[in-house]
Length: 452
Ligand code: TRP
Image (cartoon, rainbow, N blue to C red):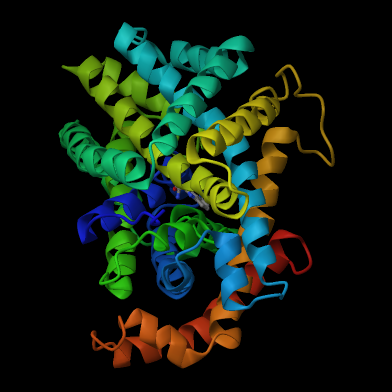
């Protein structure tokens, strides 16, 4: 059977953007920018995208498209019989760890969409918004049910295949996401006092910048662009042969950042306009948006639109997360796509319950902690702070020092058809010297070996 690819450059772009855009943009980005002081954090974030994000993304695209295999098979083909394939195996493992908690938060988003449609947030007060969020995350049964629904949706799309599943869904929903977020932005920008929020987001005040903020920005850039665990290797393996890898990486990174900014523009003016704290943490999105939208004309329609677009973002990102172990099972172990989709969904949903039941100290399993962290936090910590940066570091080393330079250049220039001499040289230099150094610093810091 012929291996599937996406059918056009546009399909490549939307699928890859669908992976990058996710809860990272709409949930993590605003609350981290809020906590770490706005504009200055943003400026550092841009630099991280440029010097770490883009180089690793291009490296992953190269590995995938050159070999046209899943992450494990790809590395095995480039360096047969070596340990490099463990990058792929580690990737599949990180994919599960991320999915355990990601599917939980996605479940809250679906639940909020359902509640918005039902009209649960009409005329809500700040206290009530907090109580509702508490009820949603505490459950104990309902968040698990929603997590299962999320996994059923993801598995069904993946079972349909690369073209009929991933490509079709992302090509339809990503443009819709843009439209919906711009509608929410227009409303937010016309609120009284909106400018204060915009100033907060864009004013660069470097005196507020801490070492922790720099490290967080780098981690976020990585998570945002879906790097370090084989997602972009796997998607790269479905790219068309004539795709310009530099072009796609740049367009995806820019558009992803644009979506983050648009999400920030929807959230911060409303936060300020209603006198709320921009540093409220992970609950920011869930507590502020319903409150704000309940108090403006057409609020409920906008609320449904907002949680619908967030569901789209979360779902298309999860497709790419689960595609990593799915493609591995399918190609290396001979499991059919539908069967592999079901197996993965069952594994994720059943272990993911542990995350869902340990979100808060008061949750059912909240008292089961190890070194101060519960299941939810461990899944997040091990994947985001250890496996992703280590995966990214190994990929940078693999591309910069193990694979032949000519080989990479040939693939990236589409066999010499594209003139990329200058960009390629700049790229290669950054990838060899700058990217690994930055990643190493972040990793050593995140596990506490060096401290700023
Ligand atoms: N980028 C997605 C987001 O911002 C999450 C994601 C999808 C991801 N695939 C990934 C993160 C692979 C790390 C690795 O929400």
